[in-house]
Image (cartoon, rainbow, N blue to C red; front, side, top):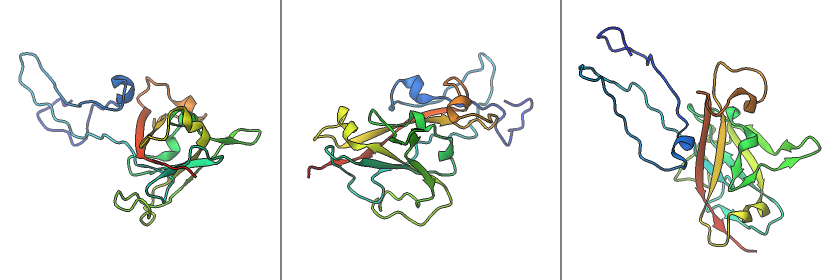
Length: 199
């Protein structure tokens, strides 16, 4: 909005929308429309960010093997960027298929780590580029539990992610900072290809 005929340099009206909750799924069409009634006016979109971060199952391998009879874990990397701060992700809501992050110890510590493991390159999935200055999140999921949704014919797997990027929030856990109706709340589903293997 502007009180004059001069186009503002930065948006004066901004609003985040949780598209996953609004659409009820991870696919849909997006468009823009506006109206002023019988008056004449310009409606300019100054910025538009639609971001789903890159993920990689079994970082450093391509294709991404999954042995559903394995007694181990499956690592998944979420790549950070200038638009995605992985420290804002709520680890409690991370699910691979329907499986939550593996926890260890009496304190049920999540088996995750944050570090810059390298840049994401769609052409070099088995060999990440040099570190890019953005932290990435790597979490482990119990492989055998993935059988609730995956089988021998599965070719991809979904990672459900939510968190809070409200700069005005402070203190408490990420889950305490945002409710689903807050502007800072975000939620998305990222997908990666997998290859089911049998040993």
